[in-house]
Amino acid sequence: KLTDLLPDKLAHMSNSWSKFSAHFLALHVLHNQVIQTNDEVKIVPKISLLSLSTMEDLLHLSKLESGDSAPSDTARFGACVHISHFKKVLACCGKDYDANVVCHMADNCAVNLKVSRDSNIPHVGCFSHLLNLEVQDYIARTPHVNSIRDQVKESFRKFRVSNCEMSLLRRFTHLTPKTNNDTRWSSNCHLLTQFNRLVPSLQEHNQDPLAK
Image 1 (spheres, rainbow, N blue to C red):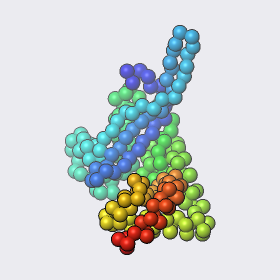
Image 2 (cartoon, rainbow, N blue to C red):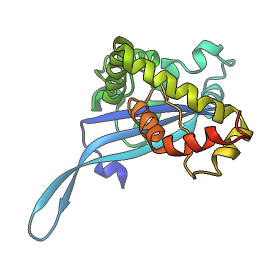
Image 3 (tube, rainbow, N blue to C red):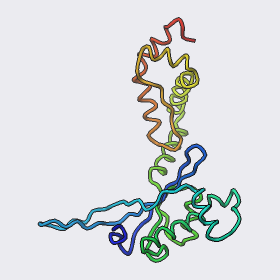
Image 4 (cartoon, rainbow, N blue to C red):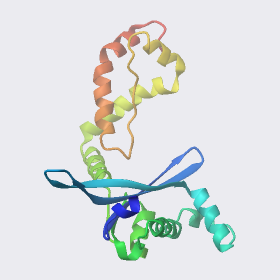
């Protein structure tokens, strides 16, 4: 059914992440879907998941097909493995990677940029990632904001590394300290917002004779 829905021209979007010792790769396609009702015809954008695999599975299948030895650590997660997988998945859907894909949508890491260069397909970067770079640059250029953020991080750090301190804090609130994520632009806002919510409880904690 999905094969019938995919148009001749489509954008594909890939995402990869690690969980424990496994590295995952997901492939989506972005396309328009025509929905026809009694009164009108609507064209709505749609994202369809085509595949979700671990890189180890992809490498194992590639090795079985080619008979080659295992690739080096550098090549295991390289652009050639990604491109080979994308071509196989799209071929199963009756689409040709070189002829039907108009752009590659992914974050701005080196392997994704190389996938686009090697495939001669335009790369559309992750705007959330670009926005995060701008936010990080602003914080670095604004000393008082940077100082406040670092002080809040240090204030929260002792709770995150000490079960004793965390258990004492739970006597005063159900809220927990957060940490910022360097790849998420909104995490700095969440960090400071959580600190404001925790200020009364932190003050009570600091007055507790059991607190360090």
